[in-house]
Image (cartoon, rainbow, N blue to C red; front, side, top):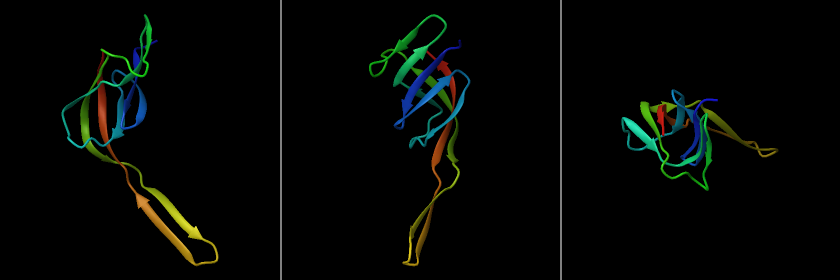
Length: 104
């Protein structure tokens, strides 16, 4: 079993381990390194810590690879039958690509 953690950022939870590359919601102020302090669960070979709701003293460090990454386009369609109404709206979410460097 490898060392991993569950972190919370941007209202979402991610299961990460050292060396993982993940896409998180875009961070407004771009930095070279990030530190996630909201760690909900930490597990390694020896023990498992579960937060209530988060674990104090545990943090996850990450390097920013790309500050802004565009996601796939999400299309939504509004349609009303018998009214000749159809509207298509597109949306491309923005992400920040980070690489997890250290879990402590």
